[in-house]
Length: 192
Image (cartoon, rainbow, N blue to C red; front, side, top):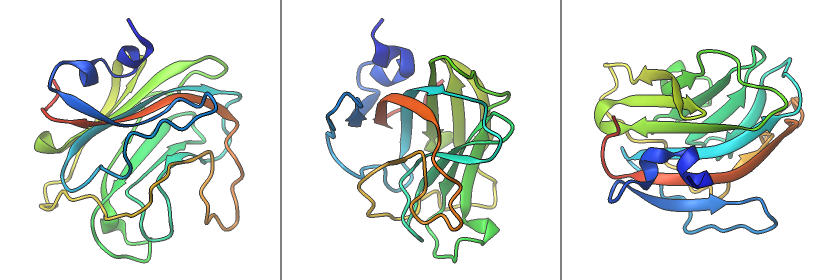
């Protein structure tokens, strides 16, 4: 089985997805197209990760961050878990608790010092955001019923930040981790 199919086996079934971006981190940026996760679409992003040490504070893992325009942010938490947050399409100053569309956190701490595979998958028809560690579902969250518009926050950010957030003040520093084969998939069907 190829590395990609280990990261996201459902993404490679015929007619189920389109790879929209791939960063191999082997000295090149293999970006197929930019910024295509849009309104109420289902998607998965998958990668392999190795943490050098257990985190003692919340650290930024991945985000398409720019002040006021982010769609998602993923963190390594002080408890050793991973959390990913999706943002609703609404203008706020960043502190409105209603801005969040859905968050998901791994059920237990992730491995330290060894490579493992991670996939975060948002299924819009079922309103479900799930996280998988080494192909096993770790946790899922459902968008609260009071939210009727599942549109992600509009963003023209065409890059992914790894290991920090550009506008941190005060800075929480850089994440000490290795990342490889980050891929984004637009899903065409609901996943089981």
